[in-house]
Amino acid sequence: MTFDELKEKAHALPLKPGVYIMQDKHNEVIYVGKAKALKNRVSQYFANLASHTEKTRAMVASIDHFDVIVADSEFEALVLENSLIKRHQPHYNILLKDDKGYPYIRLDVKAPYPRFSLVNKVVEDGARYFGPYGSRHETWGLLSALRSALKLPSCSKQFPRDVGKERPCLNYHMGLCDGYCRVDMDPNRHREAMDQAIRLLEGQFKEVKADLTAEMELAAEEMRFEKAAELRDRVKAIELLGKRQKVVAGSLADTDVVGYHRGEAKSCFVVLHYIEGDLAAKDMDLIETPMEGEEGEAVSYLLSQYYAGRSRLPKQILLPCELEDEVSLTRLLSEACGHRVTLVTPQRGAKMDLIKLANKNAVEEVERATSKAERQSKLLELLGEMLGLDKPPKRIESYDISNQGADDIVASMVVYVDGKPLKRDYRHFKLKDMEGPNDYASMDQVLTRRFQRYLDGDEKFGDLPDVLFIDGGIEHARVAVGVEEKLGLSIPVFGMVKDDRHRTRALVTPEGAEIGIQRIPAVFALVGQIQEETHRFAIEFHRQQQSQRVKGSELDKIPGIGEKRRNQLLKEFKSVKNIKAASLADLEKAVGKATGKVVYDYFHTP
Image 1 (cartoon, rainbow, N blue to C red):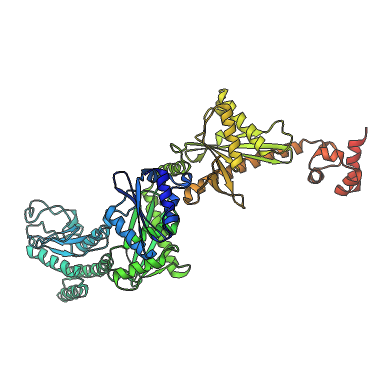
Image 2 (cartoon, helix red, strand yellow):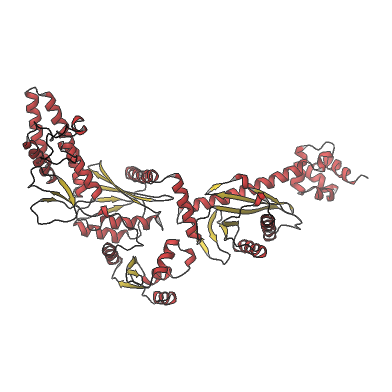
């Protein structure tokens, strides 16, 4: 289908909830999404393409056709979306990693020295299987804790083949393994430890703990204190293991706390698992891109993926923000596990402290995984995508005009290279031959002078920018385009549109298309910083010009007129020219009769 045909089809969709399935020319599913109103949501993809991110534009360009499935409710749309994403794994959907599947722990009980492994499904092979568990990452952690608690081998040695071939490894000497590779080690000890491991995986923590406690007390009575201490440590390890096992199995967790952070280069989704008020485990997913859209939309999307398909869920899930589809998601999770799951968005108190902790973990994971150079590179890449540039903008130039009346009209040119201010390339301009304030004429003159200097080979203006930011709206941007056309240049131009507080809220193209930058906070912060720096630099130069003009003014020559009176006169009459033209009465009213007469006589005495 052509773009116009896709657009027409989207406008013909019903205003009903459902799921839309985007496909390419090979009939591959490239994106799946849900909507409250299919017509409104799908039509957005084929309207105002300039406002989309590069990723969305690329996805739209790949669409050959799409299908929709109308649902009876938002809840049904949510369930269907999860099912289709899991089935098709679409390229343009942000997906949690494959290790978020539901693995089983396998134990080959027929082997002389059985070992644990992780598998994706149960097979009729005579082995023991435990699970399924919540995630591969946490399940590996559970096995590691199990080996540590029971001092089972974690090395690559094969038993009984490697028994006695080498000296015990470092794990044995550190007390992490009982050393089953030793010649004098009783093989039955391994079988006993594995039997305990099986009982623990079956949830028999109280029974195993009771057996070990009895063995510890017996060792103490027989004055085998080293053995008693070893068993005491094992009991403590099993107590902690019990809590972890419950969490990884997803069975008896009281509370899950969700954290989320969208960095300049990556995003992170964190879940902290609590049992009886104690933090028992942490699960996280690092996403190799800053997720688009509002925070609530991103959290809802990740949350539904993370919990979908699990049959055991916590009683409550604390969220870092409000979710638009909270009712549907609550129903989905509750029906999946057979008990009420409550979604809570705390605003204060102890629960809010838990959210802050989860968010802090998400921030730290992103910062740890992202270098400073990578953050800056990704930030400029995102900015380039939002602006529709062919490549990230290495050099950005920003311009602003500052004036108060007809005097001292100035302009500033601020330069950012690789996302950082390059102050040695900053430039000031004093406007020439201006009859009065005119921002458009001023901007025309400034840009003409700047780029003419470049064309004339002036080394101070030798580098062309990759993009121009003009402080102002559509007309300011059009002025810049006019200058470029006049001089034979072609540089992308965007106006910086301000809100009521004089802060940049968006960028606008010369054609009038507004580009919202607030959906990616890092980009929003960078553009805002550039606008503020450009304005600051212009204002400082304007004040400097005023100060120099005032300091060397004719008023300083009048006897008895000091700095206070001079400033008072300039504040009242704005300029020396106006002071000369003022009547005696006006001067006396401004600075008193005696001083007013002195000033009047100075300018009117031959």
